Length: 154
Image (cartoon, rainbow, N blue to C red; front, side, top):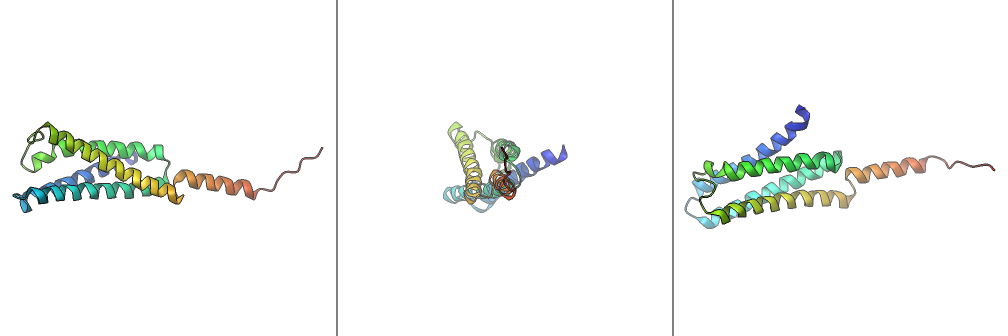
């Protein structure tokens, strides 16, 4: 049980920690500059996308997609909920401080960047032919070709 849920918790915690760090830097270093806060937020989303792309690349080599896809989706969902509801508290605000538009915009940005990162990592892995399924099919073809053809007598 621990082996199944530990990666989910660690990934969700790491994604939330990246958000907290970006919020704290934004609050203390760029408190009066909304343009720099937006740039830092975009950099945070890009970093999350790169981390998820790398993780999809690594996990996709070792395990089939249904095994790691659900874990990654759950971790992203947990991190998104923490980011949306607890993140503003860290930066001295509350979730609906800027209105419903900003709240839902943050949901769409998070979903877009995380989904894009996972898809990009897995597509790159598949394009290189290093994914779990491609390697399984390659091994199957090699085994079938290595056996001599059976001669049938009539």
